[in-house]
Image 1 (cartoon, rainbow over the protein chains, first blue to last red):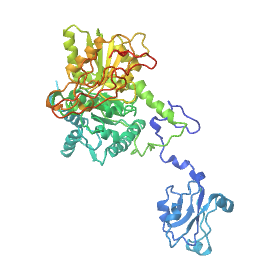
Image 2 (image 1 turned 60 degrees about the horizontal axis):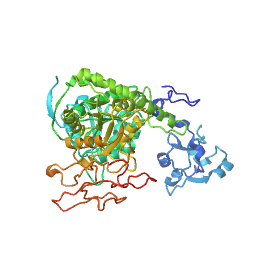
Image 3 (image 1 turned 120 degrees about the vertical axis):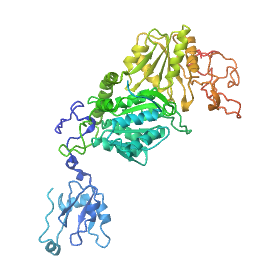
Image 4 (image 1 turned 135 degrees about the vertical axis):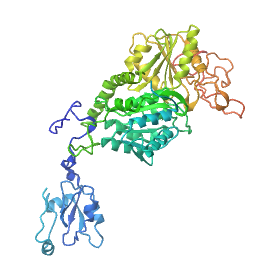
Length: 130
Length: 464
């Protein structure tokens, strides 16, 4: 089974039936570009319940151990399920129009740790590596 | 010689499955295929096979589970009919396009509605473009033999395509026939060990099945399917059939030619009704009529060249379809046969009859009637759809409705024609009081088969 992603393969070279001879390469397909709304996390309110992590259809909520760090913007499609399931007494996630978010926070920015939550986490939280 | 038994078609299939001993069967019952899995489930319960039997909630789930199991490297078989096959429809395409060598026994039964549980080929014809190989069996012996060969055909590396083994519902599936079994070891040896090309359970070489294609690759994957079916499957079916002959003493080919070599009049037909045709051929040959028959076994892939060679010498050929293809010039088999013959410099006149829908019987006298009609046809003439349903005579109390009047030529005594020469009378289905046998359904009456622009004629140009 040949597999060459650099060029279009002909029918004789392709694995039969659309079989892909690797597992999990869907990760390379960066669907973050589909987003029209961006989730913004307020770390001061977040209780690290991980309900948003559980429901995210793109596995785009990033945790480090027990602590919520933020969102993987390379794959987040902006569906808003995380904001919808964040418990009503918490409301740590709001959806912001992507254009506004980009102007305000750039392509990256998402979290705003304050001193209190930074201390809880044992230091300022780092955004996840892309 | 192997063990001689008296089995129904369903028992024969269950026995073949027992000897194949597949890894997984996922199935849902439907008349008339139910007994295949019912019997097989007894073998599972008694520990006679190692199969993981998954009773699912519908045929859609059955084939989906089969696809999942096959993608996990299992050898998989299942059985269904009619509405069940129709419910599997979307998954049939998936099984074929994922190149999974699933073997499915389809006990042919008419598609509803009205609801009819008896034999016709509308179910498998409805799926003829799904990319599956389709083999049609005449009797229980052939169904048994076909199922065993199907495993080898499907798993062949140049094919890797699922196979549907068809047999007629009730007439074959439920009638007890004398047949010969192979020994367990012979079947095991014939099907061999299955080494899947990839498996979801292979952690050393992980793969993804069922991925997305965009506009840039879909057609390439379809081209691969065409290569398998058109380029290799015909050859593989013949090779496996020949190998099987060495083991069982019964070789198999793409079709069976019956007294066709010097024939002038021919019938092309599939499955059990071919028995009636072969008997009619014998009667006619005794009377000096040069009749012959071709019983097609491999319908998909369609052996166009081989059929053209076999029937090209006939004067007239009737293709008998046990399924309708509404809104087309003829039935599904007719369409493929005509295409196969189109380029021949000399070719027979080809006509089409739709027969036996919903289990209506087709007897040797009906076949003789077809040959009698063929004998009256001139060599050339336009084909039209009028009166191409073969309405057979009733036999005893089992056929209380709908009899011929078969559509003989001539205008005498036709109870459905209200006034002679009437143009454009639509098909009528008459039901009468019990005891009075109503005429069978017929299509458009005489006078309506003129091509547009032709002057009105008392006898239509086709001569029907």
